[in-house]
Length: 191
Image 1 (tube, one colour):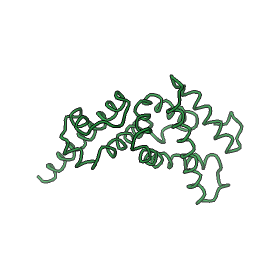
Image 2: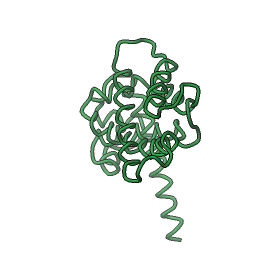
Image 3: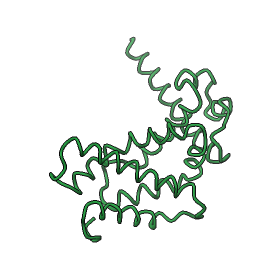
């Protein structure tokens, strides 16, 4: 019987987290600011403020968790490769520009970039292996993956925060793929 109660609590907690994530994305995107009061987030998710603090400790942790969850769900990391993966990433960030832009200009910018880097670096480890094969020593693979993640992240952040409107994911994808080809010494047609 204890297992059923635990399963029920876990399911309720999962639903509450999902509702909070959806509310965070919606409210931050609509308001164009990460400075959304916890009361508003809780109310929009249909949960108590206490539950927000219980699960996340503070608002910015909730916002970063919502962004990481959104990226993890929509990017479906590891399911695509090459240009298709880069284009899916560019489209994701373009589609959610208002949300990410608000977070990147708010108090949780550093925590967000760190969390997204942690999410994307393992994928870029695979990219490093594809680009360089066995030419790169094992310890250097991790360093190059972090380097690629940080560099691509900086370009994506500048693109999101820039004045271009609307954003063109194809143009950003071309820029990122060109960089990968240049780094890997590959001709442009080999993606």
